Length: 40
Image (cartoon, rainbow, N blue to C red; front, top):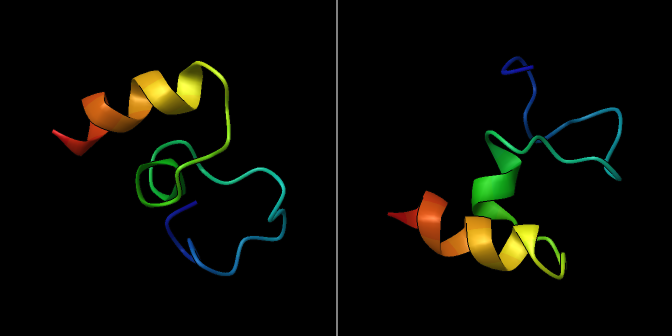
């Protein structure tokens, strides 16, 4: 998982642990709620 966080074999499903924090997914609730909470 942390071997290649930028070269993921599945770009459609970014890791919610690493990429989820940097890449703000266009999710209606998880993205908006997890964005401010994870950025802290």
